[in-house]
Length: 337
Ligand code: FAD
Ligand code: NAP
Image (cartoon, rainbow, N blue to C red):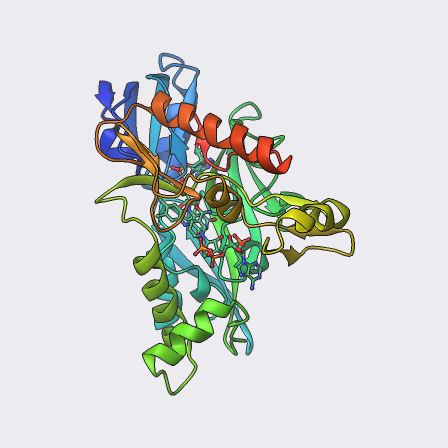
């Protein structure tokens, strides 16, 4: 094991924040993970980093950072309709999407170009363009630091919710997800319910609907709207879209007739956080090295030399102004370290 000390984490987080890890090592196998767990000379405090695309580093990180490079994809079983794939958690998410499309296995094509690793996907039940990863997950296997054992949870046990799971709640900080079993469709059902996809497919003049054309449409929309972390530091949507009671929504509509909403249940609606933030005047705002992206107000950015604490402060100002204007408490989606 190569143990590095006092290393900058700048290359390992998409915000590009220059905070240091007290110790850092790469893990390439579950055996190496077990060895790290058994080594009492190593710090007890451990932090897992996948692609670093959903973390905000507000200070130096004490203890040991584990960079997840545990790779491998195997077909567990298949029948006429489905294939069950075991994917090790250090695989790059977008590469898995492309691998599935290449084999004509459907279910995750709408999730193309989401940065990060497979192991982080169940953490917040990644979602985009009308699809959530939970609908393809059969089971999740993880190492439990305290139990000192590998444990497998069924989909139901993962308690997936909107950008949420048991791994973000009760099991937060307690487990290392090592592999995920996905059930993908050999007879794919295309999901183009999300308006922007249909429009993009028309623009592309796509004659045949396919896994490839849907993924290409998603990739086109994403590259036109979202800042590329290699150019401008960001962690995607900084806040979750709030779900509010229909009654509260109807009351807000009186003064804000154009407020958008999407039904969640009979009593609840989802309101796009980006719209709320934009209405408060933040879209395109810049203060020093931090700002709110000009094309999507839900994305906070680092123009180069921002500190994590600058971005944290800005997120607090955004939260306060949305609360003051709409009475809605936004929740940060990004994991703050
Ligand atoms: P990291 O940032 O490395 O880690 C995130 C958290 O998960 C940390 O707390 C970490 O400790 C923990 N973690 C990571 N791996 C493991 C593991 N193996 N076991 C246990 N804990 C672990 N998200 C969406 O849902 N939908 C989107 O459409 C989307 N678009 C994005 C677009 C951009 C440009 C960016 C920058 C981000 C976007 N995101 C999106 C957010 C992010 O890509 C996802 O949340 C992604 O799953 C994070 O993966 P990661 O490997 O980078 O996680
Ligand atoms: P958008 O199309 O401008 O829409 C704004 C919001 O409205 C989205 O967040 C989405 O909620 C909601 N929405 C739009 N059409 C919907 C529909 N038909 N049904 C239900 N909800 C609908 O959003 P965007 O910012 O360009 O993002 C596009 C997609 O990529 C979204 O699904 C978004 O979640 C995802 N994305 C996520 C991140 C992240 O970091 N989490 C970053 C970039 C993009 P949902 O978010 O619930 O889908």
